[in-house]
Length: 112
Image 1 (cartoon, rainbow, N blue to C red):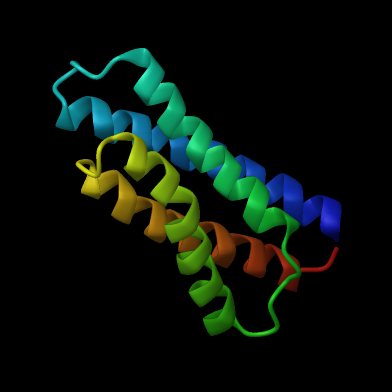
Image 2: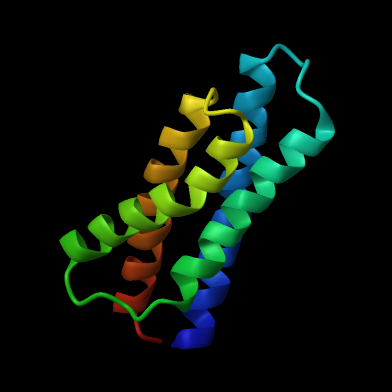
């Protein structure tokens, strides 16, 4: 169960990180440097790792709340390195934290 949860959350974080890279590239019209884009992707991967290591929630609403809080905490690190200017990526991190938690919650319900 734990291994499955961790793998699912890491994969979700990696995939959502790719969406972040695409979004940032569009917002900055291709002018974002590769180090910032990699940092953004890595931030989402770490979010997946952190969420995957947490004890599964019993209720969906608890999972969503925890995902929002963990997304906020992890995304704040990247937000601070941008000089508190990239609010879109910061808020997307909150939403992505909720998405990762919901996906891992749903996967956890189907105990194979």
